[in-house]
Image 1 (cartoon, helix red, strand yellow):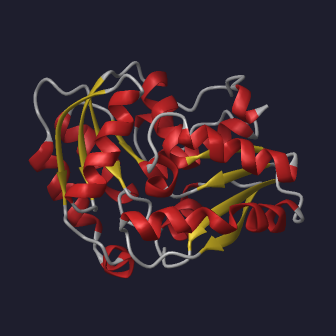
Image 2 (spheres, rainbow, N blue to C red; image 1 turned 45 degrees about the vertical axis):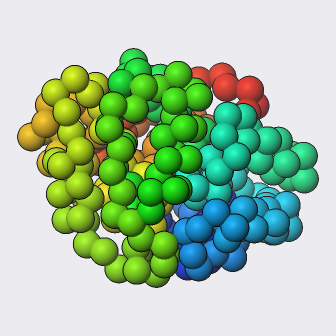
Length: 243
């Protein structure tokens, strides 16, 4: 039995059920919460103030890896900020760790993708920060569109059709993949359909978080129904932040 520890924003009502559905037998999920109600820069920044306390709480359940399943709080300060948070988690727990933003970059590299379009639930300011984070990590963002939302509960109440429609709107022929950002936005149910229709990989911040967690615990069996990334799950890489 393997255990995944997941740190989520307190108002996130989406990532847990999406995670549960995708996890294979023999893997359990254990969750701690970090306070957040608004997807605005000040609120996002304060989300991680209890990071170490909640990470220790998860570690006490003897989890095998801790995932910060929050995209904006892990990319807010740009290049390298996600890895700073990983180091904090590891320092207080001794556990392997990653973040949704780290997993996103690794997933795109794994797929051999360097040009993407970005669709997100965020407002323009947070969406611009997400775009800058991708570009600082060597990913060219050809277009970026957001839903303009700030209230995280409102995001969690959206249907997955909103992700489908925005992905279709933002896609461009020269984009190698579509990125859907925000772990409180229902995306997992439309990834496979979008890939079939658009003929390219679609990655969401929840999907990549599942992918990174499974790789970290050494699971190599593919998970069908959620796109190429999880369907063709590869053996875990030896990333230093997961050591």
